[in-house]
Image (cartoon, rainbow, N blue to C red; front, side, top):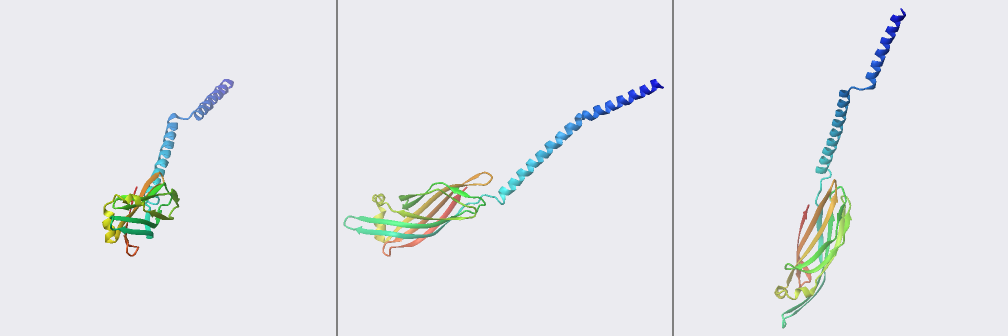
Length: 217
């Protein structure tokens, strides 16, 4: 009986040791399956987030062009005289351009230094800088630009005398402002504003104004 009991005890002990060994050493297949499930779950989360950002970027946070509007172009100063004997025109002109830029994006729009030019028949006759700034989300920034004619740049233009005789001078106000909006990544935008105006020398007023706007992403 003692030998049989001892044999039975040894058998039970061996069984427990085997079970403990199985519990302490997980099945390699089980470990591999778990790792695969974790990798698939992480990949699915990354793909879902990427898809979410893509949808938001194409809908809610889609980059939109800033909207530029010229509210008015006014003649601030005009000094004009005509020397018929010498075929000379003495002229000083200052234009006030009141404009605004609307940012339709849900993030701020930063613009760097730009330029505003006064042109006469394709030639820059007055240039001023437009300081850098920022326009908040769905906000509007007003700008008042003063463009003054540099008379010496008109001396070599042969069309000036004939335009002065006709009583009307054609000018163009041109404004270029580069900037960017940071959404998921930076979107670079350049806005262009062109206003063709005619100055009536007799009435000393602006007789015609036609403005066009363009923005490039």
